[in-house]
Image (cartoon, one colour):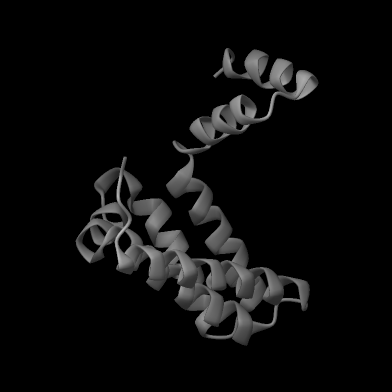
Amino acid sequence: MVEITELQKIGIGVMGFGLFFLLFGVLLYFDSVLLAFGNILFLSGLTFIIGFRRTAKFFFQKHKFRGSFFFLGGVSLVLCRWSIIGMLVESYGFILLFRSFFPMAFKFVLSAVNIPYLSAFFSSSSSRV
């Protein structure tokens, strides 16, 4: 079993607060201050969880450069108070960065919760990919 260090526990909390502020910023009609605070907390929480070197390695891999560029560009646009455009750019970058993770996440959700219609839909759509 993997042991979670104290820094990783702090990182999980910081990342949770970041996601909360991002959600709250979107619900309050793209409030730029809440979105900027959520982005900063999310990125710092990610750094606490996996470490600075692994975070830099993840964002600056050659095949993930475009996703990193859009994600970090969206974060910088949100920090410059262009919240709607920044969140759109950031969302596109997030999809590009984590597109290899989405099939694993879907399989995990479907194995954890056995939903008959959704599991049939995703099992037929995964064969098309």
